[in-house]
Amino acid sequence: MDARSPTAWPTAIFDALTGLEVHQVAYVPDAGHRELIERCQGAEATGALACVPLTTEEEGIALLAGAWLGGQRGVLLMQSSGLGNCVNMLSLTRTCRFPLLMVITMRGQWGEFNPWQIPMGQATEPVLRLTESLVFHLDDPEQAGETVASAGRMAFEGNTAAAVLISQRMIGVKTFEE
Amino acid sequence: MTLDPTRSESYPLMRRQVVADLLAERGETLVVSGLGAPSWDVTAAGEDARCFPLWGAMGGAVMVGLGLALAQPARRVLVITGDGELLMGLGSLAVVAAKQPTNLAIAVLDNERYGETGMQATHTAGATDLAATARGLGIAQAETVAEETELAAAKARLLAAPGPLLIDIKVRAEDLPLVLPPKDGVALKMRFRRALLGTD
Image 1: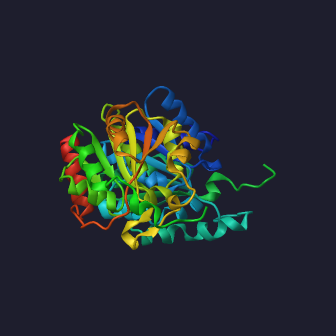
Image 2 (image 1 turned 135 degrees about the vertical axis):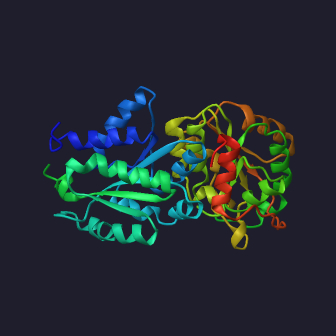
């Protein structure tokens, strides 16, 4: 399969999540995550996993701590602005050493048309470093699956937070004309 | 109506007794308690590895309970939290409503105060009604209990009725001795997982 085709990299991430035995998928929607969320919703219909739509991103941090207490792995899908909502809740992850896999679509990073996205987009990696989360950059769609698999393995085997940052250049720059 | 910080001083229900009675009949129920007094209340009722008491993560108790309930659909999950903690995470009630977990119950010990910071009034000391809020956010079974005569039925629902459900229990504002659970988050996580799953 051509990883550069429009649907290939979300499928590669979905397959990586399946390989990681992720059973809870928490998300605040993002245009960059649209296809992946749809794949997960399709899997929920077969009973393979649970999709949990959040009202704000920090809910997902707490949800996935509870999932781990109950013996399940999960993933949190969000855009970079959402990480700013998570900062105090990440103390739960850090203090209890819960595994936490985050897949974050970047805004305010490359050709951004909305200036309101720039502050948190530029602060995303520093915030992750300050909260002692592992950071994985994903710029090449052909590496989507292995990057998420690698981050997930280190999160779940290492009892730590790990974030995959999907570059805005890879997703495609959004405009209101699209 | 603005906030009345004296109203809850005369409520008849006492939180430690409510929690002790509730947990005495817990059976195999898994418990998540919210920052802060609810965690001291569940500890006063007796240490139990199948309780995960939060020392922080304010606003997160219901979501920890939801993640646990989804992971363990055959087990009852009871979240015991306070009015201040829940007010910081009201959106989580909408998330619960979106999933409708039948094994999840939420007990709110509502003393209309922020207990850990000097007993300042919360919004429930005014017009804010947490049971009505829960119903509006999609948890149809949500009610307020304030009298001793209502407690036995409320406890039975919290422990066994099909969820999701929320009971806002109006309790007296009182200064109580701290009864603290272990503080180390890793230890709390590991003891819970060992008790439930038999693994770290």
